[in-house]
Amino acid sequence: MDSQLVASMVEAEDFTAQKTTKPRFWQRKRLAGLVAALAVVGTVIGVVVGTTGLHDAGADAQAASMGASNLGMAVCYDTYQSNQIDAHFTKLATRFSGVRSFQTWIPNDNVIDAAARHNLLVYAGIWVRGPDYNKDVQAAIDGAKRHPSNVKAVFVGNEDLSNGWSVGQLLGAIRDVRGRFQAAGLGYIKIGTVQIDGDLLAHPEVAAACDVVGVNIHPFFGGAPVSWTNPIMDVDARWNAIYAKFGNKAVITETGWPFAGGSFGQHIASYANAINYFNAFRNWANTKGGDLPVYFMYHDNQFKGGFEANFAVADANANWKFDFVPLTPNPNPGPNPSPTPAPTVKPALNRYQLPFLLQTARGKMVYEMYKGLFAYDEATCANERWRYNLGSNQLVSESSGQCLDAYRGANNQFYVHVWPCDATNGNQKWNVDVENERIVHMTHANLCLDVDPTKPDASVQVWGCTGGINQKLVVNPDLPHLGIGSRKTGNVLAADGTAVFFRPLEGSFKNVQADKTATWTFVQSQNMIKHEASGKCLDAYEAKDGGAVHLWACDTTNSNQKWTYDAVNLQLRHATHDNFCLDMASDTGEKPHIWSCHGAGSSYLPFQQFSFVM
Image 1 (tube, rainbow, N blue to C red):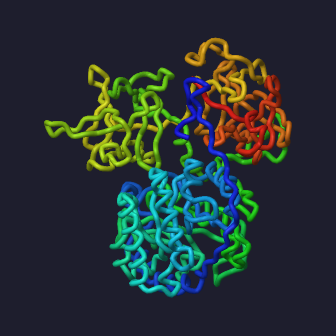
Image 2: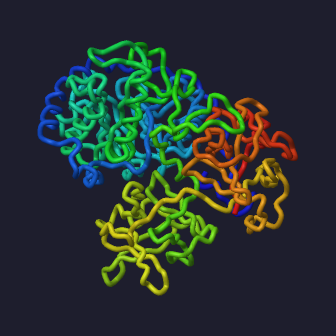
Image 3: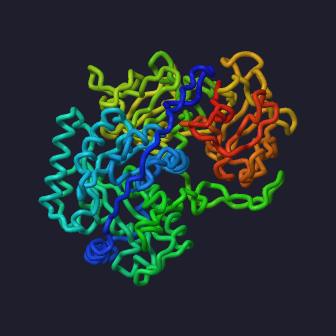
């Protein structure tokens, strides 16, 4: 699904039906090798801590050169319940930007295909220490052919050097996979491997054979005292050592802390310690950890036993163990709950799954028209809405469907326009640097999108990156002046007083703003839906089937007012009342409520499917 912001109801695409798969079981023996290797890395930690100030004043300024992420975060996924992969990916896509699998082949399906169905990036794994190696390689090739923009990289193996494999064996597998991808016409797909940090530092020839190297850093098994007194400092030191040697080629592919399972030396597995570590790592990963760092892991596999059965952020039934979006559930739901502080954890950048505005420091919007770019006042139209393809690093204009493109002219100067999208076109590769509020070209060195207010035609240009005000561009995910249209009836959500209801649009979908009582702002930055005429917010205060939905005074701390949009199934999901969705309740929708979210095979799903219209 490319977008769910549409000009008419018929433009919204159907989602892909879920597939039924059979479970596949696998095991990883990692503890002994991991502990041995990390004891060696402890000496590296001592050197780094002794020579580098982990909190020096220049650290923030150097963040961009330390492997900063702008894609959010991915999560490891164990396919032992592969028959539930669509349900799992639907849920994890509300919190994470991507997944990392340990294998790609699963019965009757393909992990890359599943990730693409849910608009997720994927690090596709190839398990080398088992009988399904060739199946995994072929599945990765097939999936990459169908969905190249979803594949972040293909990783050959996982912690093999600490599990009895030689460097020669691992290099042979990497070269075999690379050769087979090249023969399939997929030479542009990044090929790498995942190993623990100590093994990568000891064998740089492995990294030299890769386009990308995944590093697993688990302070829980660390040998240095800092690994239990300050685990994030341990991660920071070890990442700095990896980054100093391998640069932007590196990405963290596993880190975590177990919720249970006992203690490992001075490392204590507990619910509180696991949440604290997750929070700390999410904040740390805003500036370090690689392009798309990966957390270990999504849901528990109790067949593993011990610590490794307890690392996941969701239990074996895929229920979140704790809440990690910026809201706190209200334990006593009601129309006027007491304010509660929001956690500091930031959600993955799923804001990119709906169009956004690019807002200049002077309040103008970057606007596309007839292939040119301009900076105009906000006008509520598709010309000023953009999407970002996380897999191909392309900025796509909502109005034309074409991509932002910076090219070198005959006079050797760079110019910017939109051009038909091509994932292999280096002119269209951009880094949306949310942290530093700028749009940086990834192919042409030191080139930034630039808005010079003195230009008489208000056109936007590209210029050498200066960090100045002309290059300050904020991703504004808050979408004003929208209608919420039912896929089932074509009616729109309207409000009168505190009551909400569906009715026919007064006017046309080309001008939703004319229908004042049916115009909303989706405040994605706060996960809230605001009724523009009244200034109140959509509120569901009963966490049950048939729970009431109404308007109530907007309050960013009111967890009853938190909503997310599932761009795959087209559902407005309540972000606090887990697995409840906005539901029309009847064919007419005169009194909508919340109801348990229906799956793809349900005949009742159309009652919960909505698109945003302008």
